Image (cartoon, rainbow over all chains, first blue to last red):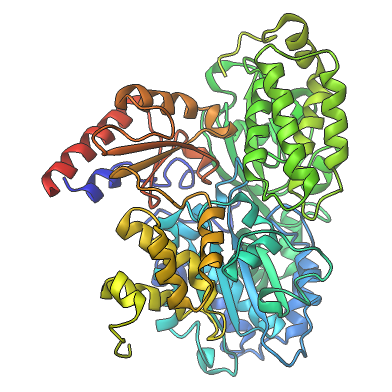
Length: 450
Length: 176
């Protein structure tokens, strides 16, 4: 075997993470098997019908830009990257009569620990993102777009480039798309290992070929984005939701979920479950149901806690999680956030101090160094949690942790500072006894291995 | 593509094939925004030469019409760039929390034991460089290892890691 053949044996097949029958009414992952990512397969699933429809190719009059945006607003779709901002509203912020170049950007820099949903979309259903972006570009009068893909998933980047070639050859991208007056050029671009570039303004800097250091907002990307031009950035899953919404209408999408929380959502379930993977379910599905889909807690153990929305989201204890539904509003009400939909499941053998130690090391490593509270504060957080974990903690350390976290929150250009502080506060709020135990007994409260 | 001036610095440093790949990346961006291709160009150089040398940075700076220091800022900011030579195979093992809960740290330790290297180091025969790393966006497939930046390997149990290391060793022997 040559080198490529050796490595190919271990390549992800998507069988465990994506092609299983444990989704509920999936829209984005529906009917995928790993081989049917090509254009002809996507068309056979109804692909590009939404784009044809808005361009008036199906004998219908087509849709105006305002109609597309109104449909998006009706759908209740909220940004799937983490912030949950209403997509239709974001699209309406773009200055449509702006005389110069405008840009559309897809944020596929999926690096929030726990999240692996966009990889499977781009790998196994890339055309759904291309179609969603083309519809968005039409609605906002944009002629150039970029999909910025996480540097670590290079095979996915190559897959997306191949899909772009197919779409260009079929006339779904390029000039005068499907014989209309609509032009849209779409390109793939990639990062190279910087968590911070998932932050939208850091991504813009990176796209310009610079260090990925976030920009101060305002001005927002809608007025000053890539190359200083008006730019709209959405997450991969957000764009992937668009074709279904156009085909079925905004109210139908909203009806899939809950009021103010429309549609399906892909949850990446990782950690202590029997069947880690991506699960596309209607927004508002109970956590208990999601856990059941993922095979329950591993090894018949008990659930201790869940980080419900990626590592930056505050942890919630089992009792709260087993009682809530998975949607923006319910999780926010419980004191955490839906974030990117990364559900990290932690069983009762785990030490929360050790878990936090690893997360704090991550944020220290990934701070871009631009703002002092984050650059210095993330180091402080890690050093304090590390000494607690290794049995060198002092009684005053818990107040110090609180103080450092408090002094990072809200004092940085981007959300990475908050993202480092929130897990600390969540852990201290719900699992303070474990931290105290570490100070008093110099060891874990649980007989943990991790 | 246009015929290229063979006297330029980039033509002396990079092969025609590499320059063609640079051109493919450059074509994605507006003519006055060539710098946008810098990450892609650096990653192509790393794939072909194994690491980013100061000379490569100069060549890319010239190709893209940007200051060498601006190229260096990028190569030092993004974690995946190798600023020093690495082994024939660079293996990154994710040890972030979701992977840690499913044996990521243990996979790293297994490789340390098998290869007799510390995290961050290269084996004496120059074959393997082992690095712990942060989230690679494949959390459901843990433990995961990324080989030479471009090949993600999933569900890497100890057996599979052994199989991969032995396989890579043999494949490398056949090539050389």
